[in-house]
Image (cartoon, rainbow, N blue to C red; front, top):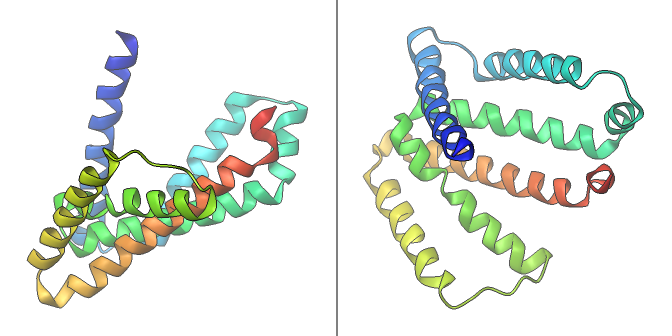
Length: 171
């Protein structure tokens, strides 16, 4: 039961974050990079304080995988906030499902993962939904929004690969 409550709480917090990011960007003209760096720096310091001293923490911090993951995560978050500023949070969240398509393609190409036949209708529904949302965007922001969403999806896919090959994951 606790897992279900945490899942619902996380979904609600994501919604609040999306709306909050859009509000700060539109109403206060906050630069996405500034918002993201401040939020991630605070989060990182809290996590480091919570983890406390230990050899695994230092090993993880010294790893180039960690730095690559972190920099791509910052880029992903900045692109995501820019997307929320460009279009509504609802449209942005639908477009961010592009990450599912990227993950499937990366899985085929990089990991040679077999997919079941039942996966293809779902992929087709996602592609149709992305096409409909993309076509319905205002023409003056359509291209920018689609490129931002694709950038977020690509960063997410790259970070998934980095997380899978990170040497400290097994420890």
